[in-house]
Image (cartoon, rainbow, N blue to C red):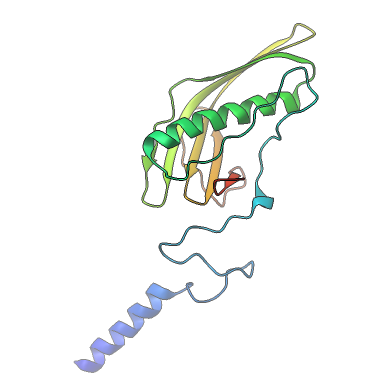
Length: 176
């Protein structure tokens, strides 16, 4: 009986710790349970704050040091406004006006290792040629103490999958 118990414990220990002691495919040690995921600011992908345009670009807000439902709600509203605003200034020429409307508000749900939040966004802009454009989408975020991920969908909120090609790492820590 003691031998069977030891065998079962050894097998369970091996199964539960598999993948925790060897480096991952990129040579970096894997994230340990309870540890924040690593984040390289060089991997951040978001429209730069526009300069030298008719309209001033928007600076990205700092992520709150303490993550709460209220702090994330305000942070994501400001962050998505800056993201959408700067994207318009980056992709359209001779922009004369930009409007970004958060249609539902970001209402974060705590997941244990961070927060998930989504909201419908309407972006409109006009150009010097008199052209006007409007676009709606859903901005989906995962906010953790380390990285912040963004995924854009067309109709329904979705969970940003950190390893999906369409998911963008948009911020590391509080300062980037």
